[in-house]
Length: 113
Length: 113
Image (cartoon, rainbow over all chains, first blue to last red; front, side, top):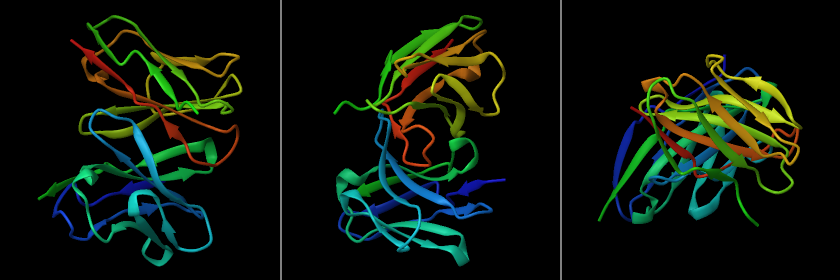
């Protein structure tokens, strides 16, 4: 069965510091992988996605993610965090059957001045 | 271009009541998805509608149902509300039959008392 694990429930970083949010997936075939961000009281906004090709994917707001098949990981990174990046981040895998997203439980990011 | 819209923004109901949530997809999108985001449970897939038909269903009881209209908008109905149905209900849309990005609406916050 497909599943997504985000090991870190909550992360706190200082503004200007680098960030890495972890995501591991379990999926039998080539995964379609996504990172979404959710600000308080808001819906989900797509940050980036990986379908195939270059394993380093660039997204919006300065985020990037690297697909590592050998580690079944799709970690999200940002070199310098801004206070406005404080939000909930969700990793997801899209199952080919049923167009169904499997979401991780999310990582809450706090940015301190 | 307008994004996915949902109504109402908030709802308060009591146990045993019925509720209807509404979603309008992005223009040109014919697939609509419903997710439940309950506290502590993350995002759970509820239903997928495409071209007016229910295509897939998550692990939810039959009292969760819905439909899709000819204009591709959708309703989610929940009968016999229970306290644990309190959650943010998110709607997403995508192009028909495509394994592609789902774009999310802002959600409807349902509180069951």
